[in-house]
Image (cartoon, rainbow, N blue to C red; front, side):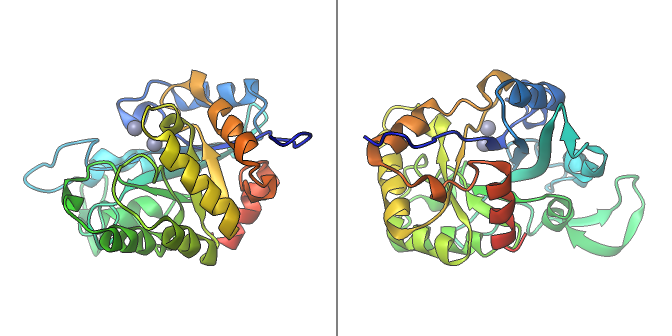
Amino acid sequence: MTRNVDRRILCDTHTHTLFSRHSYSTVEECVRAAAERGLELYGATDHYSAMLYPEHNGRHDVRDFQFFMNYEVWPREWHGVQVMHGCEADIVDLEGHLFGWDVPVTHTLGGDVRWNETTLKKTVFRDCDYVVASVHGQDFAKGASTAQVTEMYIRALDDPKVLMLGHIGRTGLPIDVDAVVTAARDRGKLIEINETSLGRPGNTGRCRNIAERCAELGCCVAVNTDAHIATDIGRFDLSIALFDEIDFPQELVANRDAAAFRAALVAAGL
Ligand SMILES: [Zn+2]
Ligand SMILES: [Zn+2]
C-alpha cells in the first residue's frame, strides 16, 4: 500500500453518449458531469461499430455514421472542461483491421456521387482526435491462438489514429500480455485500464495482471470509466484501489491530468 501518492485522474477519455444507442446521456450532460466531478478533460468515444446500425443492401451506409462527421461544431472548452472527440472502433478480424476499413463510401452525406471514392473508416477517423480500438463481437476470433490474437492487437496499434487498446482484460481472448504491452510502449501508445471491466466479476485478476505488466515494462496506461451514462463519468474508484494495491507508478497514468494526456497524444504521433 502506497501512501502520499496523488492518485487523482483528471481526464476521462473513453466514454459514450446517446449516439452509442445503448448509452443514455447527451454530450452536454456528459460534459457537465465531467465538470461537476472536477475533471480537466472529457473525451467522447462513441461506438464506431457494426453494432450501431444494420447493413442496407449488404453494406453499411455513411449516413448512419454522420455523428462523427461534424465534430468541428463541438466547443473545445465547455463548462470549463477541455473537450476531445474520437471513437471506439471495433477490431473486426485477426489482421487487426478496424471497422469500416473495407466499406466504400461512394456518395456524400447529401447523396451526391463522390468524385473520389474513400472508405467509411477514413471518413470517420478524419475528424477524430484519437481512436480507442476494442474487440466487441468476437466470433471472428473463435479458436484463435494466443499468437494470432496478440498479433491482431499489435496490428490495431499500428493504425496511426489509434491511441489505445480498449479493455483488453475483458474479452477473454488469449493474449501474450507482455508482447502487447511492449508493442504499445514502443509505439508511444496506451493500454487501457477500464473501470467498467474491473467492476465485472471474473475480470479483476486479468486486469490486475495487465496493470502489473504495464508497471513492470514501463508502458503508459489510460484509466477510463467507459461510462454509458453521465453519472458514471469520472468515477475511478476500482482503478484507484487497484493502483494503490499494486503501487502503480502515477507517472505512467497518461490521463492523470490534461497536460499529461496531451503529451501522450503527441508521443503517439497524434
Ligand atoms: Zn458500449
Ligand atoms: Zn466503450
